[in-house]
Image 1 (cartoon, one colour):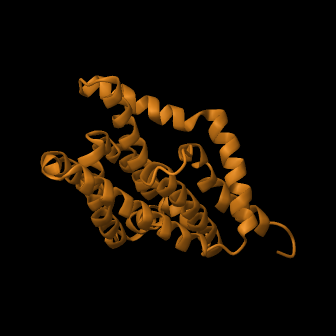
Image 2: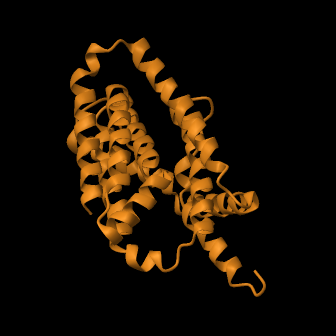
Image 3: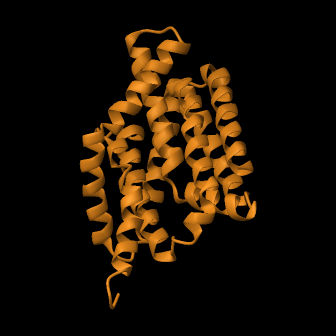
Amino acid sequence: MIGTLINFSVIILGSFIGILFGSRISENLKHTVINGMGLFTTAVGVQMFFNTENSLIVLGSLIAGAILGEWWQIEDGLEGLGIWLEKRFSKSSEEGSSKFARGFLTATVLFCTGPMAVLGAISDGLRGDYLTLSIKSMLDGLFSIAFSSTLGIGVAFAAFPVLFYQGGISLLAAQLNSIITTSMMNELTATGGVLLIGIGLSSLLEIKKIRVGNFLPALVIAPLVVFLIKLIPGK
C-alpha cells in the first residue's frame, strides 16, 4: 500500500500547487498545455493498444463493457458524485459545478485506467516494490498540476478513487497473481490504451464527447475473456 499512498499524496499536492499558481498562468498557455497532454495521452493510448495479441478481444470487451457501463450508468454516477462533492465542499455557479465534475471524472479515469496502476499495485502488494507506482505518481503529479490549474479542485478528489482502486488491487494481489498471465495483462493494457485514446480525444482535446467512464467494465472483461479462452481444450 506504500506506493498507493505516495500516489494519493502526490495527486493532492499537485492539485493544490496547480490551484495556487494556476492564476499566474495565462488561459492560452493552460489551453495549449492541456492540448499537449491530450496529444500525449492519445499517443500513449495508441502505443498501449499495440500490446494486444488479439484485437477482437479488445473490441468485444469494449462493446460488452459499454453495455454494462450504460446499464449501470457509471459515467453518470461519477459525474453525480463529482457534483455532490462540489456542492458539499465548494460554493460556485452551475458552470463551476460542471467544471468540478469534469475535472473529477477526467482525472479519475486517467489515473485509474493505465496499466501502471494495475502492475504497480500488484508489485506493491506482493513484494512491497513500489517503484512502478512511484514513477506513476510523478506522472500523475504533473497531470494534476496542469488539470487543476484549469479544472479546479475536482482533480484533487480523484485521489480517492485511486486510493480505493489501487489499494484494493494491492490487497488482492496474492490471489490475482495466481490467475493473471502475460496474455491477460496484454489485453488489459490494450483495452486501457483505447480508453486513454478516448480521454485524449474527448476530455482533453475536446474533439468529440465520449462517455469514457461507461467503458470501464472492459478493463475487467478483457483479461477475463483471455482466461476463459485458455480453459477451452486445445487452447
